[in-house]
Length: 115
Image (spheres, rainbow, N blue to C red):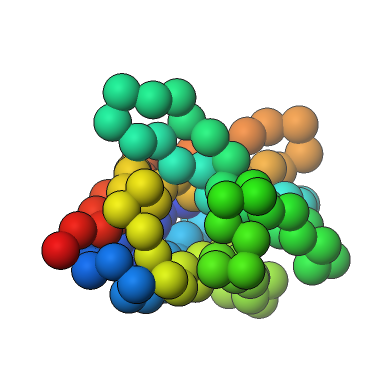
């Protein structure tokens, strides 16, 4: 079992920045892809960004150029630096961890972008 735990959400004004962190604990060997999904009120959970163990990244088009995903393999932690935030970025952000053939989810952290 892998337990991802997110931190760093909160309220920010449009144009502001936040940095999310997710630390994975438990059976952390063989963790490969880590990433972030988000779910806005009344909508489905969607991909935001992924990063492999070798550093290859994938972003949804709506966050390209504004968000940056990174990871510290020694700490089994993935980060999401979010800049130029927009009201439409408001959502619960979920950490996603792939270990072998299993996927694990964090409980989520709320990001609210509002003036």
